[in-house]
Length: 326
Image (cartoon, rainbow, N blue to C red):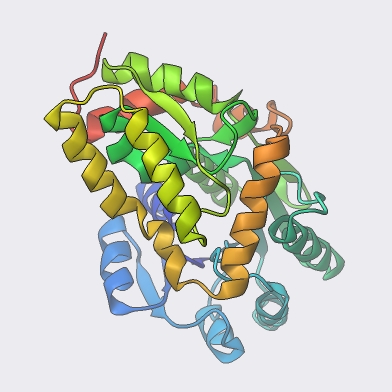
């Protein structure tokens, strides 16, 4: 049995589906009945409803499990108490393998979220438990949060349009992780950097323009726009001025985009500390970007080349019923 924490998240759902396709049993750790219904549709064999910050429930969830895939929710900043409970439970239940979902370049001191991952990696390795570490880059899927804006002709994000970002398709992460879990022995003790493509948002916008059949313009939002209403208003006005077309069709998508992005990832319900961490992360990316890791690792785990950004854009646009440009 393989336990997946945060099983209703973007990685968790894809990984559950991949493991189900391989015929491997999954116990999905989720926080409520609505999420439980989702993961059952994804193929979860068992569902455990609980709180990752409750040590007793972690011990219960890990009973009878031989492998664990742990990805902490973004809203949890201090991962150490959760990790301590996982280590204790893994030792008690003699867990055979832990695959830890970390982050690319966890040694960046300016980013508390990255530093938390580095401390978690160190604690896992010091524990003596069998561990495999995956370090994914910035997700391509993050930009789907502004899908309606892309339909309108703008690609807004709280990062400079010229900052180079190493990115990875979450589908590739799920496939790579499922391959590791299906055959864990060769991967124990190893760390893999998962990067598929490197480009800036001007280049992303050019790709979306090609795919969508209309011009898409990259827009830099203020990195603190998720917390500062004045910044958000200014960014909205900038996007209005940059619309590729004043036609009613663009306006419709733009209005829908405002509605969808107002609370993307449920960020307005995160703890204040988590939102502050997110803003600091965007400020760092705004100034420095985020380099890719070793781009040889992901194709090795996949057994084929990693997904490029245009492949991703075409797949996602088609899935949403958008008529693709040739």
